[in-house]
Image (cartoon, rainbow, N blue to C red; front, side):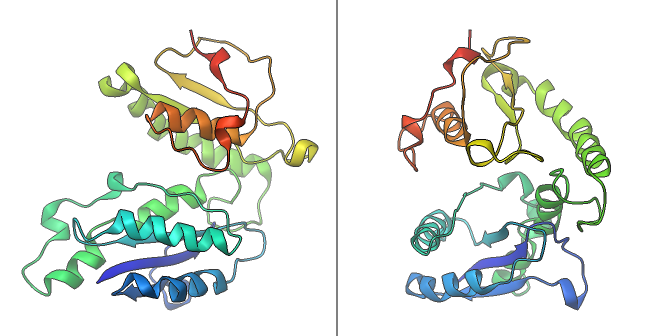
Length: 238
C-alpha cells in the first residue's frame, strides 16, 4: 500500500491543527487512480492561490515513480497542469523513518519531511505572505523570498558537485502588472557550469524554453508539452 497523496493548496502551511491537516489518501491498487484523481481535483483551492501541492510516499521499490507518472497522466487528462518533483532531499535519516513497531505505517508517516517541503515550496515563493496567507504587500513577500534564497542558495552554489555540472534557475511564473503573451515579461536568472557571466539575453523565451533547457540538462530527451519546439536558450552558454 502506498501513501499516495497529502493535498495542500498553494500557500497553506502544514500546521498540526485539525483545520489545516492534509487530506490523506491510502491506495492499494493502481486501478484506484481514478478515485485518487477525483479526490485531488475536488480539493478546493483557496482564494488567492493557484495550485494544489500533492505528496506521495512509499517504501523503496514500491512503485512510487510509476504511480506518480500514472497519476500525472490521469490528472492531465482531466485538464490539470502537472509538474512532478523528486523530493529525496527531504528524506529523513534511517533512524527516523524506520521502526520495528508498525513498520509500514511508521515509514508512511515519517519517511519524508513533508511539512518542511510544503513550507519551502509554498511560502518562500514571493507569491504568498510569510505566514502562508495573502494579506501583505509585495515588499514583504519579496523580503521573505530573498531571506530564504540567501540562506539556501549559497550552500548550493558552493557545493563541489554543483560547480562541476550544476544549473540553478531562478524565475517567476508571471508578471505582476502585465499579461503580455499570456503572463508578461519576467526576469530569469541562470547560474551554473558553462553559463555566461553577467550576460543578458536578446531573444524571447517562455516557460517551455525553460522546460526544454532543464530536461536536456538532466539528459532527458522525452520532453513534454512540445517544449523541444520552443526557442532554445543556447545563447546563455559559452
